[in-house]
Image 1 (tube, rainbow, N blue to C red):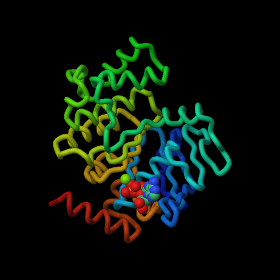
Image 2 (image 1 turned 45 degrees about the horizontal axis):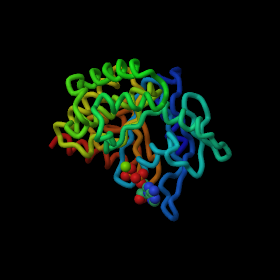
Image 3 (image 1 turned 90 degrees about the vertical axis):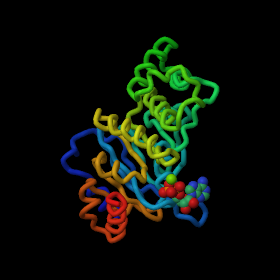
Image 4 (image 1 turned 30 degrees about the vertical axis):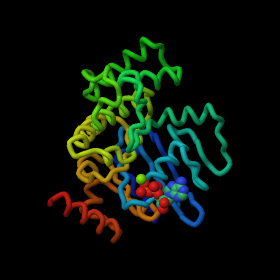
Length: 268
Ligand code: ADP
Ligand code: MG
């Protein structure tokens, strides 16, 4: 089953560069096998969504990709460079580089409450030492504009709505010029209107060619925006394929049941 997941990767985009490649990623927490032999191959400009029931290991897998969580086993390469295998141990600086290459957007936005929207975005660049203050302000202003928040740039973070805060968090992740963005249920703490705002920014990023891995329960987004969907359950990558294939022609019984139910909800 596992090798099937890798082989299913869409052949038409094989030529483009691999940004994230993970093979055989496994991790246990005591008795709990959170991940068992999970693989993924994300090419430049691709949007891969990861879906599956709660507890499937989706968050754990995302965290493994940027080594926020160290797997027990497996290989992970970012931008063609091996960052994890059984014997490799990255130095602190190398680890920081990996994290910078993969911008992470979480369910909760973790903005600094004493800073404005603009300052939250500039701070990330200044701390990483990748821009002067003037450059940071210029970049942050452009990014806030890109996520539709230019007018809110000087608002203190706590004054922003949930949807606005999450869009600032996206701008902050983009400020590090990552090779890919990783999203972990970015809308699940938001009301429907705020979710729509955030999803529309994410859709735009996808259309502009941003490489993204998105863990989500937003099945309409998964269907409309993903190049590929990976379905996980109980720590395993059960099946992956194009959005159409997964929603309408999934091979495994579990994925068929999951996507049929999602379609039912979308229609009702
Ligand atoms: P998902 O994001 O798909 O809901 P998670 O990756 O959060 O799933 O969790 C996968 C499994 O690993 C769950 O059984 C969860 O309880 C367990 N798990 C996740 N993180 C930890 C941890 N830090 N310590 C112990 N168990 C954990
Ligand atoms: Mg999760």
